[in-house]
Image 1 (cartoon, rainbow, N blue to C red):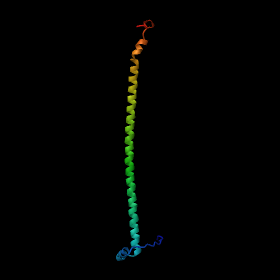
Image 2 (image 1 turned 30 degrees about the horizontal axis):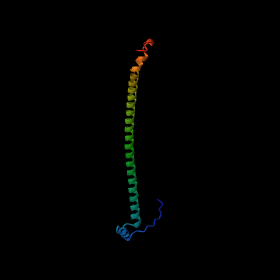
Image 3 (image 1 turned 90 degrees about the vertical axis):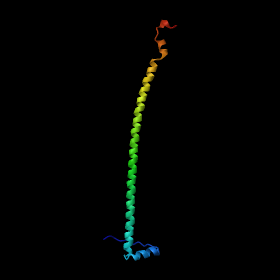
Image 4 (image 1 turned 90 degrees about the horizontal axis):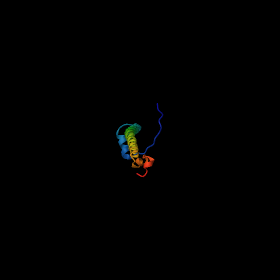
Amino acid sequence: MQELKQLNVKLTSDLYDRILETGRSRKDVIIDALNMYFGVNEHNQQAQTQQNDKTTSALISQLNEKDLQISGLHKQIEQLHILLQTELSKNVLKDPDQDKHERPWWKFWA
């Protein structure tokens, strides 16, 4: 048998009368009410935990999507960088001043 502890509670007369009308002992009614109260609170806490889990999983999936988008953008930036480097190297090769430097030394006046 469980150890019982005493709890003294003052109730409104209306609530006390309603307890007496049930025909059950006051102790049983109060024990049932407290069990129901804590059962509901535990249920609410579990529901809150489940809601938090759903929110967390939704945020994690959003982060994963953003990671994929960032990696895709990073690849595009790398490709654009390579393209820019090739275009710049082509422009350096087509420099009009370069033709002047490639002439023989005796054609410096032309």
